Length: 135
DNA sequence: GCCAACGTTGGC
DNA sequence: GCCAACGTTGGC
Image 1 (tube, rainbow, N blue to C red):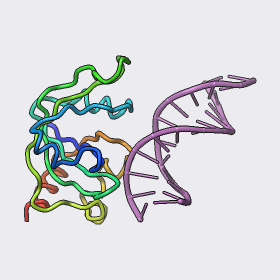
Image 2: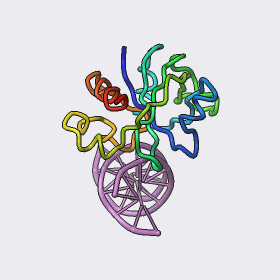
Image 3: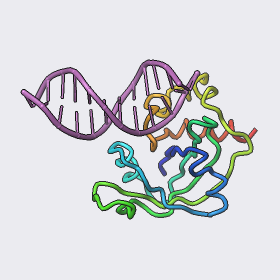
Image 4: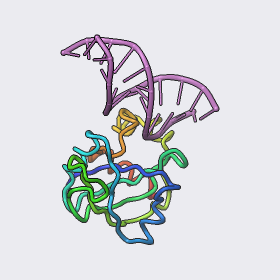
């Protein structure tokens, strides 16, 4: 099992919408590194769901339903999408500032590579975020 | 709204 | 292949 973090701007596609929809196609990724991360996702992998810009916090969890396939929103064959399913909205969101202040979580790729929209998460980081989000 | 970080583009 | 110019992302 691998762990990931996906970013979305809440005004564009908040986790509340994913909950309503049940699942969604994760399209629009136009960065090669993020694309490579999408391609490495396996069915069943878990994705922390981060609200960027407004919010700046990890708000919940999604699961990979379908592994990478060509992005139907473009004719360029470089880009792929995955399908994500809703898992949960955390009882307590974990703020970016909290991650930065945490000895373990301050090393997360989210902080090291702040501009990437699809990022790997280490198992121990994932476990710690789950702990913090379920007081 | 500003700016740092970083990716992309195109001239040479 | 180098690098300046420019665009985008996202934190603050």
